[in-house]
Image 1 (tube, rainbow over the protein chains, first blue to last red):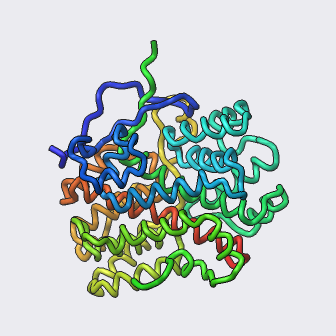
Image 2: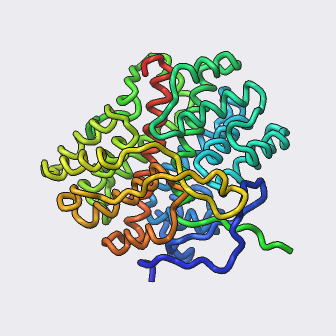
Length: 202
Length: 199
């Protein structure tokens, strides 16, 4: 049974980028919660993730999942200087907007809005796209994230210089690079192993 | 890049102990250690699983080649050769890169307000290299091309194609992680090289 593509239950497909909470429905069979070994559970890092079909699917390769999650947490949560959390989330949201991952964009737009208190700017990024004007510092972060996300990458010294002029030091620029690069990892998993679902309309 | 390298990203960027970039990476020690741990989990796993070393390094070489990251592709190609892959397979990977390379991201959205952002682009089907790659790796390369260049086009049929070619559900998770992780690793290397002023 696990060697088959799943048909998600009836659901509402989101048609636009949003900050609303979305669900994620897998196209491949996650491990059953009751079948997880201690190695699988360790790979979830946070015990609460046993509820997530996404993480129980990725737990099929526990070594890769655990290392992925620990990389993710340090890039976004390490409080030691560098780029403020709001702008690490902005880089994640911009990358997700450009690649077209509605689920990832919803989560990280929510975080960017929460930490920056700039809800209107975040909503404009979602609605209009990565060319929208968000003020020079945010424009520089979005442009750098987008250039690095293009394949082949279009990121170069001009993006580093623009970020420096906007007031970022080298650790903060490294944080932009890592946040955008990480969402090139996350977007591809989220987009290709399942699909987002909007909350049922009342 | 060899099995005994201390850190693959450091090696690919050219980071030396005591340099400015060494100090910057040291400020995010968990990210540095676990980017490396991901590389090891995906390319030199303790338990081999259902995906062979040839397959892992062939896909790695293909992904780096599709990114136009030639030095990184050469490093994965060396590991593919070291894993004992025959010359015919290595040549087939190079041929596949040449026929598959394009520009991304492109793809379609669900019909609605985002349709105006739909961007057309090629869907890759392996050509002359199919014989040397074999059905299983050919299916993986077609899926990999979609993940690299137009991931928003992903849909259940591409997973079905992998299952039909003999990839198990767990193998598909590993394959997806290899492609997605390299999409990260390659961009960290490109970004840090630009930050160090040596593109």
